Image: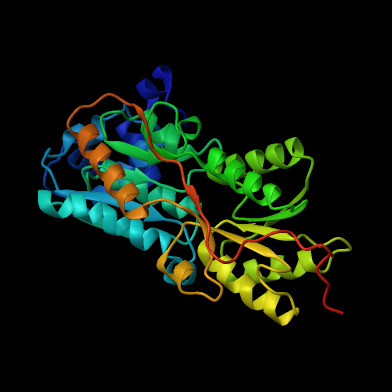
Length: 352
C-alpha cells in the first residue's frame, strides 16, 4: 500500500492487526508505546504498520524517544567475499575512529539478499533500534534511498554519488574521473585494447564507472570491453580467462577491486604472460596487498579509512539537524607501481 495522503487516512488498527496476525489491542499497545506486548511483537507490529503506510513517523513518535548511541550498517554481500576484500574492513575502521570517541557503537548486519537488507533497515527505523543508518552499495532507483528520503525524521547518509540518492546527504568519491585517468594512462603507454573487469552491474557506482570507461575508450580511439563479476577472486580470474581466450585479447586490464587484480596475476602467469611486459594490470582500492604482490600493483588509490570517518561525521551532522547535502570525499588517484608498462610490440600470446 502506498504512502500518499489518502492512503494514510485509510490505514486502520484493524488492518494492521490483520496483517500482523495479532489483536487490535496489541496494535494499540505497540503504536502507543505502552506495556502489554513483547518487544518482538512490538517490532513486528511497527514494521507492518510502516509497510502498510501508517502516517510517517507515527509509530516512531509513539515510542519513548531515547538515543541508542549506535549507528547501523547493513551489507548485502556474500560473507566469504567480505572476508577477503579489504574495502569494508578499512571503511568500518574509519567509522569507528569517529564513533568510539563519541561513545557510539556500530551495529553491523550482513544480509543474504536485498529484500532482507531492506527489511532490516525498516525494522531499525520503526523500532528506533539505532539512531541513524549509513546506506552503501546503492543501486539505480534504490528503494532504500527513496524510503529514507521519505522519512527525514530518521537520520540516514548514503555513501554514493548524489544522483543515486536524491533528498539524502551523500558522501562520495569521483569514480568517473578516476576511471578516465586510468584509461588515459594506459592509452598513453600505447595500449589500444583495454578490458574492464567490473563488479555488479546494477550498482550505481558500477554504472558510473562503466559509462566513464566506455566514453574515454571511445574518445581515445581504443577498443574496450566490460566483463561482469561479483567482485570475488574466482569470478575475477574467470573473467580474465575469458578475455585472454578472445581472438584479440586485451593488453591491459582495469579491475574493480584489489583482490580480483591479485587473482588475475596468477591467471596471467599460468598463461605464460608477463606483467607488465605482455599485459598491464590496474587495481581499484589500493590496499596493503597491492604493495606486496609480485609485481607490485598499480592502483586507483584513495584513503578508505578517511572515507569511512567522513561518512560517520556526516551522519552525526544529520543527527544534529543538518540539511541534506552532497559531499565529495576524494577522487581516487592512479598510483603507478610495477604492474603497468608500455604496450607490447607484438600481441600477447593466448594459451593454446
